[in-house]
Length: 216
Length: 348
Image 1 (spheres, chains in turn blue, orange):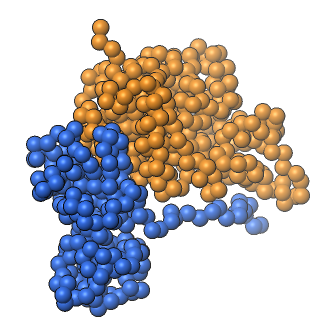
Image 2 (cartoon, chains in turn brown, green):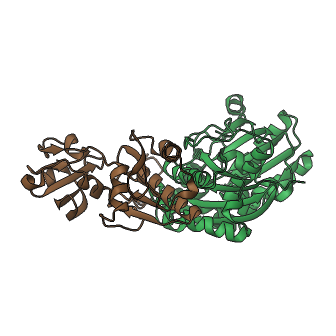
Image 3 (cartoon, each protein chain N blue to C red):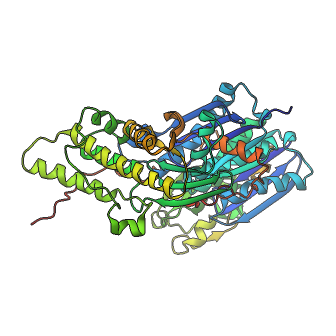
């Protein structure tokens, strides 16, 4: 088994390679504006570092968001195209599930917790978990004030909005190493590689024609 | 003898998801999926709607193109992609897919300029380009006059629109006249039964004073407003608006300026070949007028068939094939989508 995993739904462009037993190589760069530039070189890097060839790949795991659309699509179109050309399966995973699985929380003490990431426009993508593996609500997109909570909140969304989420916990961003482990061990719900947009495109239908004749 | 390079081209700069495959100068496949219907009710292309559609259409377009061409993706020698100019989010889907293909196939990647690709596509229909030539590229997003000395590396912009693109003017006037989106084909059809001299609409940037600064530039915003004023005045007077006549008069004004300036560019640069490309090149009046006036001036006109004039992957593959043939350096996997890529940059 050789699983290539990556996620582009947050500012992190994160790539990992897993052989079924352990993570062989990782590459992570946090830069919210450069997903399109960084992902493919990241994939080339992990293959090279692991001494693996693209033809050795047996599957792809990709974060399906929710996340800012432009970066999210880079991951998904890369996964779908690679899966098609190499004729290997593509497994989608909710990005928030990856963060939840890595939550730096003491489950015995905290009970349920939230995962929140930056949805821009002063909103967060979020979901509630009863433990690291069990999503009980979400994913949703909301204004922080609408979902403010004293509970532990994992992910960058918490640190961006400390008033709404005073009890922040790591990690800030998902890691493809976690994503790869989860999929390789079958310990996360697997989805189709379809983006979780959660928002409709911003569009307005045209209004009535405006007059071009000035009043005289 | 080694066979010519097999090149796959991807185009996603606007609303068309195009995947084309060529072998050298021979077109093998031209798969195009359009999200145009999804944009129609908004009266123009909505970038996020286009980007979402590109993601969904990409793999099916790749499958269709390889089936049409009767080749396996493994057989492809190089992958070319439009890296700009265009809608940023839309370009990025194609660029990311092209990188994944190049990575997955272990083949070189060429990020190319959309406008240069509109020029290069003509080789698929009319053979090697006469170079230098003047290219008039007119579409919903562009209106440019270019001096093409070598389409794989030396393209000089002579002029461009300073406001609306020609195709955009067609869309806006179509809306004024109650015709559907996209306006081009509907205005063209209505104009066939109209009188082009019914009203004389302004020819933008053709006065001697404008020509000093904007000799090869275009402006269609004032024309659109002139049509709007004319239509609205008629309506206020309770008079019917003769749609066919207004369409014909508007179209005449656009084509007149395009052809006049293109011919002036040919004369100024001592070039005897004019190539017209982009979606507006499908306009029947533009084709007829260009042939008539260029014929009289001794300038040869080349216009690819309409399907190759609108955005497609074959044009990107055609330029890619010329890059490969000329031994140009491929792009890196860190290739950027550049929404405002200047035409002087043919490849990244």
